Length: 534
Image (tube, one colour):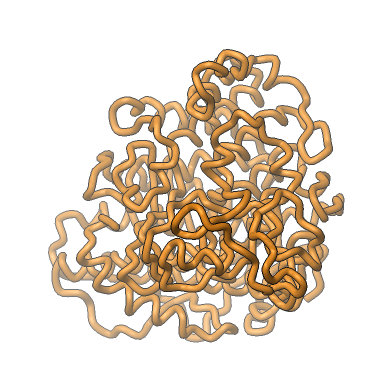
């Protein structure tokens, strides 16, 4: 629970998310013109700032942005009996046979442009108010960088998207797609133009807000992905941005020695965090559905005294679990496995018959999954990176960890490798993070060398240049929303790799998702991405 001027944020959040939840599935709001009066004072503008950030929370709910990580190599949602078929959508994501009509694409498009519309509205109101707002320019710059992050997410997913940077658009406005190269330039220019107006603090007043360091993180990731996205290598620029952030290590930011604390119920004070999304279980809409509800078995509900259901869905791909070093403690910090027990810690739990034939059998989360189409009731390691609260509600109290210092170290290491820089420094950067995952007695044998990072390394059955770093990303940042980008960036492993129940398509059109069919139907100015039907 949480900061970001919490009283203001949490007062308006319930109303904002109720509006989002009632949005028609076929409707994309590029502008919100309902309000006819301007705000009267700075407090009013601070209240208007709340939905700009609250909009992010919807991305972690069911059928939203986070589920699209299931197209990569770490997680899957197999069909279990009559559960989780859902029209075959999760099977299509896993097999890369998705369709423009699949619901997650449309919901993410709607959510993202609703967030952009709120940014545009705030900027317009502030630019046109007659009220004397001393910090007006800083607020505008902050929200423009938030908007740039929304465009980053859209660019990563869909590539060629509309750029809507005004609030005062005509009625029934129907924007055209812009090429991905233009979207990338827009993101970079927006951040570079506005970043000097952002706060350089990292404290309770800036927590969960787009300060300089959060904006630099988005800029660094844009540079890092530029070659994969538009064929323009910008690793030197990424390196410079990473260095600026890393100069604050030991001052504003520091690595934690307690990895699980970053995902605990009270994780807002963690110094490794650069940008978190504040959550509060008392506020409707604060969902981290993937953290426990989508993954745990309902037999565990009494263990956690949960007031919400557990849906026994998503799990780890066995092929990913096979990649882990058995001495790496992050495996147990990220997943739960083995026999599950009642609240007394002694009585073994049993399956309940969610899948025919399993009732009464031990509830043992196993590495193996029988099949994507017909998994056993307890098959697969389950997610447990975020602490589950005793008495948990349907909503979540853990803040979502999106940007952290460790990722900046890995980005710098990657840029050094890709530009022919100091490979030993790259190894040192990764080791500074990796070290906390191993006991001191075994650590000397687990240290990476420059040669380890420079050698081709198998990723999903394919030798990949700098592939060891690709896997280091996976082990450190699993379930944090970055993986699809990584397996695209490293030799397009996303389309060339093989993992459990997934065979490679070798289809470069799959490196971006289709423009949602519902959006094509309502906006005739949109054009479908290459290789997809309308």
